[in-house]
Length: 114
Image 1 (tube, helix red, strand yellow):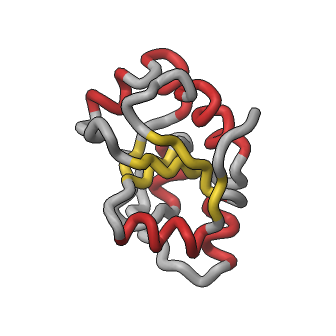
Image 2 (cartoon, helix red, strand yellow):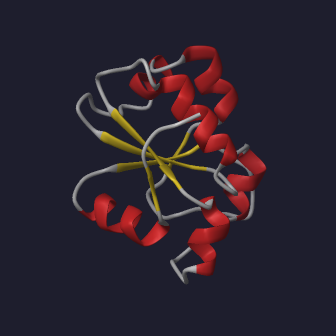
């Protein structure tokens, strides 16, 4: 598995410039704490539908998509699964939400699964 990776602070800079953050964790994990404005799209759905899953979530063509999970492994799998989609640029957030939290970046908790 290859592909571009960025750390959490670089991810925030890219989000501020228009990148879309896609959280590929399971619903309970997402509810327990996620980045504000993250699009929730579990890895299983990406594996089943490919880039069509992003189309269904209204992620625009031409967008830079930052993929995040808990530690960075599932998001790397998602990145690999989406690599053939040339309509968007897929970047892994290295270290996942664990690194995000360790960097002191804000986390939103919904307390229940969507």
